[in-house]
Image 1 (cartoon, one colour):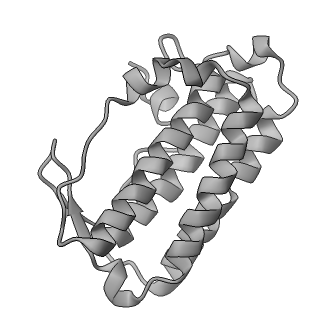
Image 2: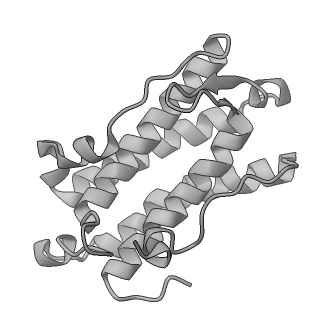
Length: 175
């Protein structure tokens, strides 16, 4: 499979040193994802929303749906990690979720959901202490212990990653 289509901005590689400035940049990036998604998809037709970024890839509507699903799961993982001692999180089948009936709904509903979710998530992150950022969760499939700091970086990347997919599907430059 063509890696430049699967990972148009590259794979996520967490930095070894995560400081307060980097965290703030990631929070800012996460907070703006819904605005960027909306600016790209708000004038698209149903035909446009059915475009894919690669053969066998999700269509634009499914990507927007996936962003909501994935970021909702991340928000919940943050809350678990903040209230439990390194909980084992629940994994979910992203591909199966992208095929469910709600992914075919009006794209503005999906964008509105993403906007509300990101307001709550970034509000939470902006109020976390340094100690809270060190809290962790355990991924059941990999057994990896993941800090909330690293997770924030991953989801800042994740939003840009899927924005690039949407742009590729529309034949636009990703940079």
